[in-house]
Image (spheres, rainbow, N blue to C red):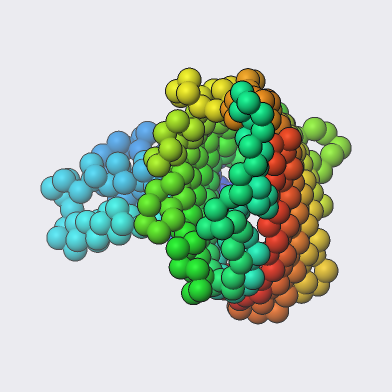
Length: 407
């Protein structure tokens, strides 16, 4: 039988050993040597097969158990490796030095990030001008409908739109933990803090969190949990808790990934509980590799309390996003439109109890220069809301500029 030439380097020795494996696969010392060598060369998938063979032939082979744990960890199976070392750790045959190494390795794993984990954080500091800091109505006068006729009412000046220069700090955290082929968990968290020196009572904080589980296969299942909160002057004025589930599909010969799903949300207004509601609806989305995103949502918002003005509400929304990259330049364009329709009259005092309809469209454009660690950007937003009830007519325009850093 041909022997391994020990004067060769380890890669050549292992290569020779692989050629001899078929004739020596019941030789415990040889198979252990081969598995250990593959571990040293960081070929953990090949090492695991050889070391597993050793443990089948000699279950109490202590060194093979340790090497097999190393191979498992190298293949991303850290939980299995930790469980195996937990058994080995109490073996009386271990030397003191070996036990110290195992204890240290397991302690490091306990506090380490999982294999395959990736994350990205971004912090943006920007300043700009907002002509309607609280999204107030542009209407200055209303006509109240009374039994004896109409009564004109002039709105309090404090409820009219206020403008000002603001500063804002945005933080975002994105993480992904793969758990298998095309499977994994994703987490996105965002926090925004805005301060307006001349109108400090319009300062706000906004937080959002999305945790999503993705599946694999031609029709890949997914599920997600969503949290949102808005605070003004330290008061919680809006909270959303929601969930969604459905399937993702990548049609053949297309660069897009199609999502079909259902959404469920509970919306709460702590300062105005009468507006609380439960939303349920469907979602269709297409995310394409050339920088396009399309999303269609439609559903019903049912009030938690029957006293909500307008009662049940139908909602349908369309979102279109386009991202273009040209060298070190990125341009983002976005259009977000939504139609809302109440099921019953909003108020007997407004337009003789007319059923409210609202059409809202938001336009956003942002340019970023990707020249280095710190990225300068400028942008603009325009929100236009039209309604058959003048009280809900809103027009907001924002321009801003800032710096963003990512790591």
